Image (cartoon, rainbow, N blue to C red; front, side, top):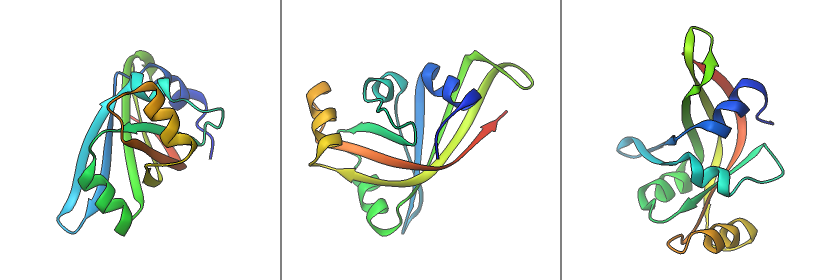
Length: 127
């Protein structure tokens, strides 16, 4: 699924990205900067690539249950109820430490051990 319209605009302007996975101990949330996501933007807007430094619990969770949900927001995007718009993006994710996405992340971020790669399955506006 491609990210289009209002949610693409939000992704292009978000300052942060919350990343939720679920493991044996319940939900687990980490975050990253929106600029990191934009720096690794691919030609396929149905794939999101995030540099992975640690994300050890996220990686363990994704090995058991590869569902992931992102929450993004920006006050710079006109929302349905006034200033600001949020979006939820869900799909399947994995931490890749080798391959083209991992190499891309490592080339732009010296601290990255690889990339969190998310195949988008659902996009919806929030707020």
